[in-house]
Image 1: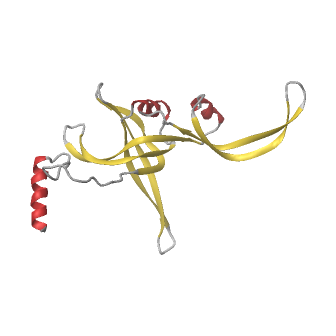
Image 2 (image 1 turned 180 degrees about the horizontal axis):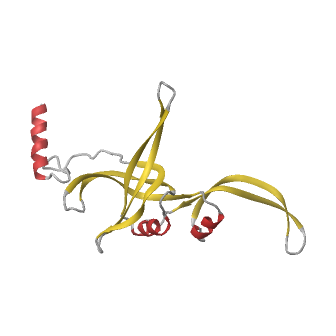
Image 3 (image 1 turned 45 degrees about the vertical axis):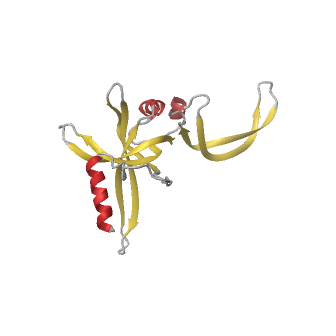
Length: 193
């Protein structure tokens, strides 16, 4: 049984090597649900770059995530993983190019993809990428940056604390005021198509 399956797999692999997409000559009777979902929260390593062609542009950047762990001796260590992020969606590409900067915290939601890319020397190399479906910009650098990024109608999430007090309106009357003092402003880009 195992040898038969492996022979079928090898035959299909030879016909469809780049994508490994077909495992049988006829359409399957049922399709099963699969999940390929990745969520990363980290810091941008390299400024976003436009690559590809004029007809098929793509934006790429790197994202660092960390894992902290403690040895039995009590010493702490941090392991950094670098992820290659690829953005194909036109509006999302534009937002990433305009607003994402090196060192900025960001959350990427997407899927993992394995394939081959051609390096600068023209050689093919194996590549693992995260294809971004959504990029959430996390900005913690103060009012000036918020004013540069915030646009009317843009979805945001604010983390902070509520402050209650009184203010004087334009007519000189005292009014009760409720404000949110923001510690973090998270910009949510949902315009990617």
